[in-house]
Image 1 (cartoon, rainbow, N blue to C red):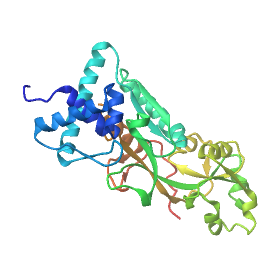
Image 2 (image 1 turned 180 degrees about the vertical axis):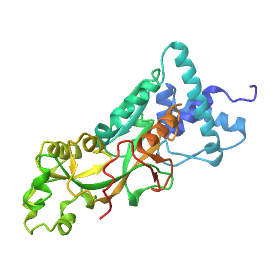
Image 3 (image 1 turned 60 degrees about the vertical axis):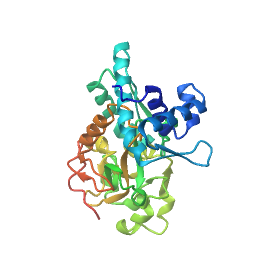
Image 4 (image 1 turned 45 degrees about the horizontal axis):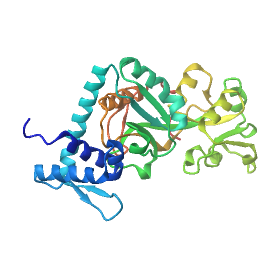
Length: 316
């Protein structure tokens, strides 16, 4: 134990990396920026290695190989200390998860409640963030991010791959399956997803030249599905987000043998600091719910989903 550096120096190092600068670390630790700089310099002298490179930008830093080696151990140790102190106080460290609105409401919310029941001593927050979160600013431990295939990172942990196919209410089905061109077409406003644009299905269903006059566009996927369940028209559904509606019979595939793979993936991204002890447990739980094996770079091994969409659905 005598060889361990001072705890304050380790805290200053971890906070500086996690928050991206000495000034932010100083604000969190309630000390001056010069005090943080001095603590880290002292830590480097104790270890005999440079941990952070100071950039010319305001408060900018870069982690050296030695710093990258030390960071996981420091983060884990501080997390364990925090958990132990919280347990003694009768409190617990909050776990915060983010995702976009459709995924949060249609897939994630119920599963987070189930996970919480398995860990009743840990408070859990679910927040809606439409894009990439700022982990430090937003206080996110684990983010589920909707990422186009072309932007997948080598270390992205793919959670879900979607398939897209036309769906409608069971009341509308007899008419919709015979005359797609005469039905209202419900569409999500999303410029970068060709598979959810009715224009890219026009040839498949032999839609007339003026079919776009029948399209009703909505700003969110939740609105599209709500309208479809209400019998307003035919929607381009995204499984497994609509699996509950399919399983309950509120929605049915108009043509069970026609679907297209989505051009986006839902991926898990952890807080780089990785301080919360339940991050890995939650990631494993979500993978089990999604029916995927943890992997990276967009190559998730998809197994049977928890709520299976119709087995007859295949790629067009």
